[in-house]
Each structure stands twice: as structure tokens, then as C-alpha cells.
Length: 205
Ligand SMILES: [Zn+2]
Image 1 (tube, protein in one colour):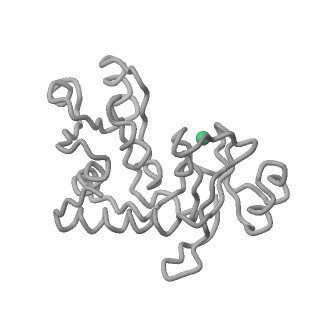
Image 2 (cartoon, protein in one colour):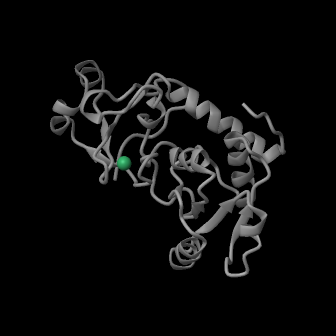
Image 3 (cartoon, rainbow, N blue to C red):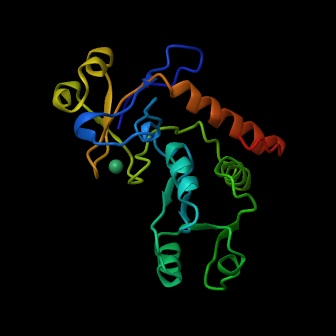
């Protein structure tokens, strides 16, 4: 693990779509962003399990570098098992699931909006969503690892390859991540979430 410190005042690496061999489709640029590798455990190692209705929240949490398991059609038995074995906090909007006596730690979310759900989670657990932002594959939930520039030439568009010196790889799906022009937008969103978690505001944006 390694990388650069986040520069909030300027010079943020840009975010770009992953094209070519990475194979992401239109609109999926948000999966292809990378700003900085944070120090390990900067989110306090809290781990979540989002129920199947909360896929967008799971991806937001992963973009914030937070471990969040999300598997579609995960039955209640498997949720109980993962929550117990992996010490995961279950996130759900289902009151029935939240009241399951076999689940030790559950957060029942009020909002149907992923942004406000992020605020609810960050508030409930004192999480700073900027602390480890963009250090985890938003699709696989795997922490990214540094990928030496010399090894990624064939996997990155030439313009991005020329513009960037730092790249990261998801060890599971092998996607390459690098900084791009939307990085500040993502960090700004997480800054707003952090502020809203502290103040109790809901912006819904
Ligand atoms: Zn991945």
C-alpha cells in the first residue's frame, strides 16, 4: 500500500473514465476514480453489510474507502452468518430485518436517497468519508494496491498514461484506477456529507 497524500487545496489528480480493456460502460465513470491512497485503517476498520436494496449506498461507502459487503439476493440466513462471522454492521431500511434478534448490530436507515443514507451512516458511526476516499474498488469492495506505471501501459488509454504517474489496481477484478478531473467533485460531495453528518442537515443532492 502506498500513494500520495490528498491535496485538498489544488493539484488533485483528475478522474477519468476507464476505457478499453477495463470495459466499463457508459455512465460508470464513478467506478473509475482514484484520488489518493490513504493510510490504512483510517476509517477505524468498521465494516458493513448493506442489504440488497442498498446497492448505491454500498458503492458510495466503498468510494469512501469503507468496507461494505453487498450481495444481491442474500438471504437472511447468509446476512446473519456474514454479520456474525465478519463482525459486520447490517445496513437496511427494512424494519423487519432491523428487528431480527439474531443480528447484533444493525442501522435502520430512514432515507431512500443514497446521499442522505451516507449522512446517516457517517453520523451514526462517526465516520469521516474523506479520510480514506477512493482507496477501494467500488465494484468488488477490495482495497486497491499500487500498480507500477510500467506495468499498466497496455491497460490505460495513452492520454491518461502520459498524464499520470500513479495508478492503482483492484486485486480482484484487475481494473486500473487513476486520478481524473472529477476527483474534486467526489471529494466535495464527501465533504458535504461529512458536514451534514455533523450538523444534521439533509441536502438530498
Ligand atoms: Zn474490483
